[in-house]
Image 1: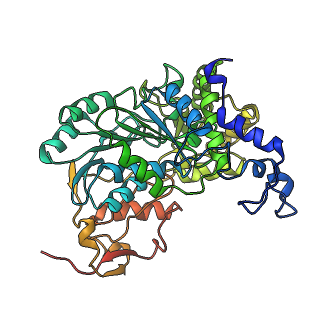
Image 2: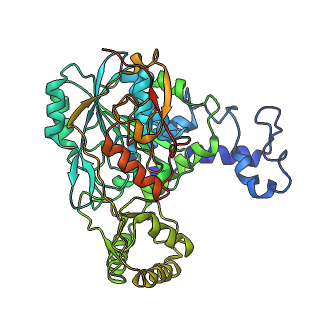
Image 3: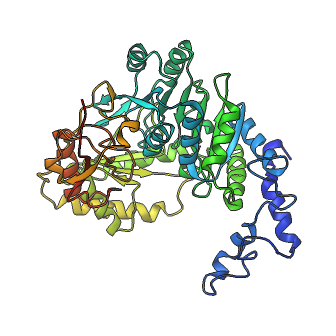
Length: 475
């Protein structure tokens, strides 16, 4: 047996299950014997693994046995200096790395199209975010690539910044020259923190983009469950280099993670590492090229956006010509195809690490949607009202200032020029269109109104009617 064929935590939990030990400890389902009658059989095998920190099963927050061995194997596979299992998703890793590095009142440079968990971490730390706008990519119609020049300008304006936080890849699988960015940030003596939630699989093959660790990042958070076979909320946190405050990071992970970590999730992280270490390409990339060609050729009602070597091949985006992206997603759902997400202008398809067994049937569904699209007149409301962002931007109200301000609600159209007291977040992808503490602009309101009309889902209560703003301002 090779090193990576082992799965020490899986073996420990299997041994526990087979031992049939009497459970006079938490959890209350007692290895699945105390459970809802109808669902018991469905959940039984998972519940038998859903145990607690009894002897032999180790402790995530002070690993010395099977969990430590599993994390060490993950460290070796991912080529980090230290790897930790996360059971509360990449969100917990993002929070912990920011709380470990940032201090109250300290500036931190952050990519503008960051996930909300990054912004929550900065707010909890009491740091002062300075947003760096990525470049507009005409090929994809999105802001995606953060450039070294933009980071250099941010460092010039804010030399006291304590770190640079980037998102790599973005939700759509687009990457950029992270190596150049880490080099210049390290020259300034600062760490690079990376939300690599959608890039856990980049280590698998040379045709995937470079990993954030290979690019020199100091702290990297990966969602194992997004693009690899792990349970939801399973994630990894990797560190390397002398700029990482390891002791404080470990403490912050205890602060933000559950004190009762899920063993099924941790076991799935152990098995996910083994799966990736043993993974064979087996023609997957050729299959994905064929999928792109076939989808592009089957219909003039959409375009398959071209991929570059810096793009994740598992992400395929359709840009419809006759309808907006939300309508195309609905048409696909009617045929039993559920896409990852829709925007005004496109639909994102996310493939897995193996050819889907259902592809031949699914392909027929795409052809049926293509046939239906041929009958439709060109949509006259495909609006791509993109928002422009300042290259380097501070909030108009810092988090510590917000604590004493009164709030009120205004209709979206009346909120222009007021400072937002809540972030406005469509989900997916969970990236704020308006930041908490940002002065609301007309173009943001227009873009949000278009999304609302197209039935986009927001993580804001009653956004159709009103947005929360700060009632008073200051000089």
